[in-house]
Each structure stands twice: as structure tokens, then as C-alpha cells.
Image (cartoon, rainbow, N blue to C red; front, side, top):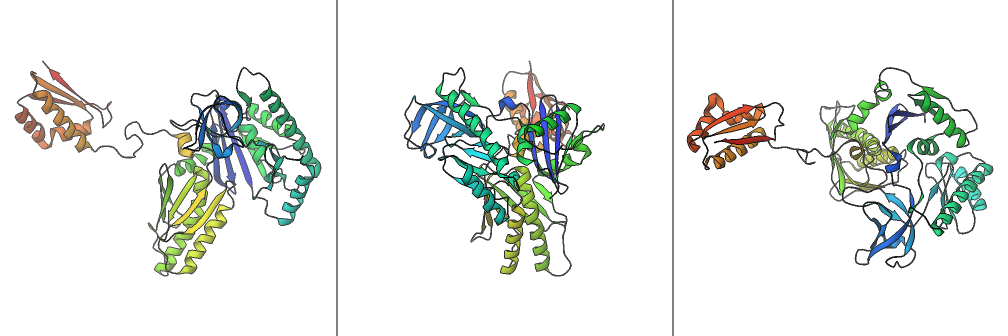
Length: 469
């Protein structure tokens, strides 16, 4: 698999696009690494314990207390006691960050788990012989009572490579423990690295990765970071110097815009409809413009197979987490259902985030879960519309015009000579009506002269009704 890592930096904002086999599969944006909490380790203080919720709230020095599941804590917690926690999920909306006592420190080749006696190998390493070799090395080098996970980039690494990485992680853990036992001005014990370092640490592989950056300063930074990560071969870092923005030049912004749409077209002419709710993501598959050429069964199968492949891409790019429900077009033949599930499973294997494909439900829907990690792409790039408040729909012009008429009627009951209305021209057209018929009827009903002004500066939902004394 050919992988390109595209890094663009401007002011305090860093964008990273990961392209695999010519297609955008992951996008990251970091505006200020100091604001990022995920993976940071803190010396927290238990503020409250709620056995009925199976949770505790921990003060880690942030605006809102962190949420800790009691199942994550080895022993019973007491209010006021100190506890070492790591942020597993950023704060969202009114909810504070989520934390865990199961600490993990990622290195280049290994993830150190100081409080867990466990050995694991990345599922992205598919060769059974290589998995066995790496697991044996990890068992041999790990200290007693320490857990290790062998990362994907460790494939083909030597025992010496893993030992050196482990030594650095153990030194880091020792520093964290020393801070925890001492007196600190801040509860922060460990801050995770910035986006550029994390991407290079987690994704760079010498054999198949190309890096493209858009500034000489960033080029030097990437080369230095790779050297610090122990990359022996000098990595070619391509410098883009064009006038057009790098992501626009590579056509990646179109992919991002596509991932931001509720409707995504398939190459065959069918389309997908994505609906994100707080609890789950629902995806509807439609044939759209595709009419096929053989039979209805063949048309449906081809649409569903292409949809299965596209859905796997979209879940990864959108960074969808939690429950996903897919409504494929109905298939009568069980063989077709099996083929679609197999295509979906195959396409999901490229996703490093853990997914669990549960298959078809009794209602004929496909259910899967995807582990929640980073924020949704839509939450990174967008905010709720201040006019529709996230509903995706706003009042029609006719409805707004009717609201204006009701307000005019109410104000007309007071001791006023006339009224003035300021609203968007499209709304003003409905208030006035064909040849002024609506306005004439309103003035006859209220007995007050009403002047309607169209104002392009107003959005369609906003208006002002003023009394003239």
C-alpha cells in the first residue's frame, strides 16, 4: 500500500492528510497543541464518588471535572484522595473530559502499559509468523508486571530496536512516577506530543511512505523528528512551493467537502445518505441514477457492494464512533447478503480503529460498532448553525411572514399610528403578497398603516417590527 502524508502549516494551525493508494482516508487538524487534553496524564483529586452511576469526578485542573468510570479504578476511591489518570476522551459540549487509570505511553514501536500485565500485537500485522516473532520478543524484553503492545510500524524490526524503544518509554514512566510522588505547581504530569510528531511516530514507514510539506521550516522539522525517532535511512521530504494551497492543489479539499455532505454519490450512480445523531450513525443506500443492465437483483447487488466499500472509507475519514446502522437495498438471495458483508469486512480491515461487524439484524439492517477515538470530522471543521441550531432545517419564508403578521397584529392593538417591518426581501414578498393583497388585508384587519422594507443584510429568519408613534 502506497501512503502519502501531507502536512500543511499556517499560523498556529497544522493540517495533516493521510492518502492511501491515491485516496484521502484520514484528516487531522490541530490549532493549538496546548489545548489538546487527550493522552495527557494528570495527578488528579477525587471530588465526588457516585456509586449509583458507577463513576467518580476528578479534578485535573480543567474547567470541568473529569469523568472516571469506577470500573477503571483498581481500588475503591475516597473523596479528596490523589489518583493518577490519563485523558481518554476530550471534553465535548457540557461534558468534561473522560479519564482512565489504565495508563498507556506510546513509543515508536511499542505502547507501554505500566499497570497492566498484558502482551498484544497490532492487528494490522497480518502475518502469523511475524506476529509470533514479535510477541516472543515482547515477552522476552518486558519487565515483570508491565504490559506491552507491539505497534504496526514494528513489523520487521529487530529485538534491539524494540529494546531501545522500551528503554526510552521506561525512562519516561520513571519521570512521571517521580513527578506524581513529588509536589507540583500543576497537576499535569505528562503532555502528549503535537500533531506532527504523533503522525510521524504512528504512521511513517520507510518503504512505502512519501511526505509532502508546504514550508522549508516544516521540512526541516519533519527531517529532524524522523531522525529523533530513529529512522536510519534519510527520509525524502518533498517541499511544495506552488501558489495554490497544498490540499487544494492535491484535490483533497474536495474529498473533505464530500465527507461533510449528508449525501455521497457512488461511481455507479447510486448514493448514500448519512445521518449522525448523538447515539448512532445511520446510513441509507439508494440506487439513485443507476438502473443496471441485467436484472434488478444484479443492480441491487452491484450498488450494495460499491456502497459497502465506500461506507468503510467514509467511516474512517469522518472518524465516526459508536453504533453504525446501515440500510442496504433489500436482497432476497442469502448469497448476495453474504457477499456484501464480506466486502464490508474486507474494506474495514484497512481501518486501524477497532470495528466490530455484527451482521444483519432481524429487520434486515447491518449493525457495526467503531471505537470512539478522535472527534468527529464534522465537529473538527464545523459548528452548529446558529439559525437552525443543528437541526439542519429552518423556517420557511411563508412561516416567517406569518410570524411577522401576528406580531404586527399584536403591536397594532397598542396606541400607535403606524408600523414598520424590516425583513429579508424574500420574506417581504410573502408579507406584501401578489399585487399587495396580503399587506392590504393586514392593514384592513389592524386598521394601521404598515410599511414593509426588504433588507438584504438580514437573514431569512430575522426581522424587526417597529411601532411609529
